[in-house]
Image (cartoon, rainbow, N blue to C red; front, side, top):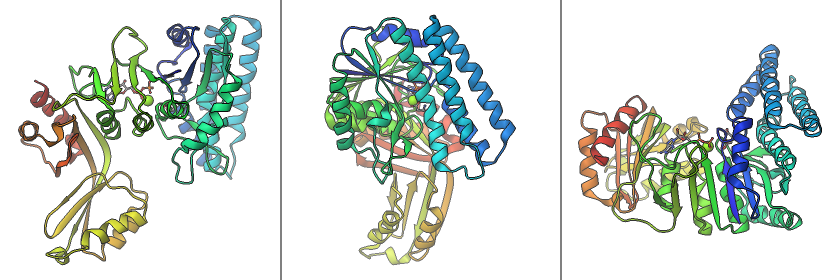
Length: 437
Ligand code: ADP
Ligand code: ASP
Ligand code: MG
């Protein structure tokens, strides 16, 4: 079975939903994972912000925007009175549910219920459309099988145990539509796989059912060699290994959710990145095979914080780094980059959730300095990570920029650089010229 995932732009309006139906056809059995209509999750995030701050009028404005947008989609998507009436009733119900979350007690549970409605709306409307066109389709709610554990990580065993029987019941259906992004947590409450999580849903479903392939359909013709939003003349990379794709996703290539390659890599399932607006384009094939010694792409991740610890006690001592790492472990904070000298160590982290506690404890080990507004730029390619030739090109490209850290030799796949976010775009452009020309 093949899993097809379509992102927000791909299901952005009624015509695009029709295009999705054309791409998938109605022949063999397949699972179709959909994101919310593009822009909807952002609107829902804003709505939750207004509910937290009890701004009723602003909240109502968002609900009215959604009302008009979804009524418009129904109008252009569905043509029979029966399905139009069902769809209108359904959207009215969702809008009421959104409004019902409002109140002085508004909390994270209400927030997550609201955030889930985007995918619930897109899949339900798309399912109505498929039925109206006579397709052999069904809708399976991700809330019935997608599960995360107490750490917020997907529980793959449970997902498989819940999903496989649902698929057996639907064995006579060809098009199985389901939501990306949404799930339930260990308390059984509605939760999600974080922003951009529909990619992750698709590969998790792939792993749970041992799919033949996962296809991620989006608005661009595959993984580009650099960030196309800020660098000109980027081009799609035809082939990536799982490791390369996982590093690019983790280090900020927005086309893939940071963790989405991991289930595919674990299960050995190829992932194809395809363009909904140019289905004939090859896209990118992510698989176990790799082409050696080639830089494939550059990506960048923002929101990085560097923590520098200087301690005379580190000199000729053993066990110092262990004590540093224990502090991070205790506060469940993972480290991305690390460089050390005899008397100092600098580490990077990508969130501030426990920053104060971390610093307070690290202060007992040495003098601590924190720098924020940093970005990691990752140059990725199997073998290229350990190549001094690549390193010298990078060095030439970095000339004139304030590089804070360089990580070379830790991984065969990746050379990472820490730069101020203010310099990130210029660095991406300069590296592009030096590495790919
Ligand atoms: P979807 O809504 O389909 O999930 P996303 O917006 O999450 O789509 O991801 C696709 C976007 O990722 C592209 O439009 C592009 O702007 C951005 N992007 C960032 N880095 C890359 C890259 N290296 N290659 C391709 N796209 C990238
Ligand atoms: N709709 C969610 C988001 O915008 C999930 C996704 O699109 O992948 O983050
Ligand atoms: Mg996405």
